[in-house]
Length: 177
Image (cartoon, rainbow, N blue to C red):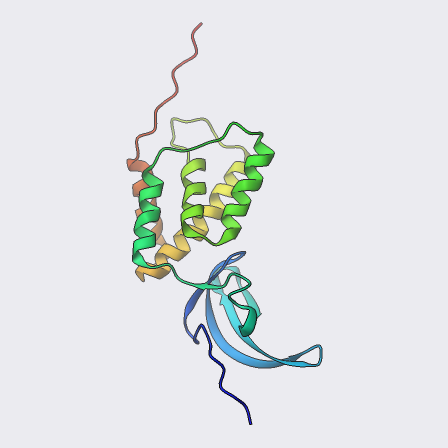
C-alpha cells in the first residue's frame, strides 16, 4: 500500500534550480536508484535542451524553489536602477563572488550581478570573462522575469534593457594631460 507523499511542487509548474535557472516540472516519476525506490521531479530546461531529475525529498535542500513573486521582481528592477557597486578586489575574487551569486538562484543577487557588470556604450569594454558572467546573469534574470510576468523572453529582455538604460551612470572624466 503506497502512501501519498506531500509534494512541494506540481507537474507543469515553473521552478528555479540554482545552478540552471528556470525549468518546468514535466513529470513526477518513481525510479529505482541504487536499489532504492525514489520519487523524482523530472524538470525540463527547454532553452538549454536539458532535463534534470531531482529527488522530491531533497528538492528544497538542493535549492529548488518556485518562481519569485511580483514583489521580488519589482525589487530586482529597482536593484538594476541602482549604482554599480564594484569592489576593488582582484578580478578573480570578484568573478568568483559573481559566479556564486548567479548560482545561488536568488533573483536579487542575480540582479546585483547584472547591475554591477552592465556597461553603457560610453563606458569601457568588458573583458571576455566579464561579458560571460554578465550574459549568464542577464539570461537567468530574463528567464525568471519572463516566467513570473507570463511574457516571452524578448519582452522581459526589453523591460530589463529599458531599466538599465534609464539609470544614471557617470561618464569617467578624461585623464589630465
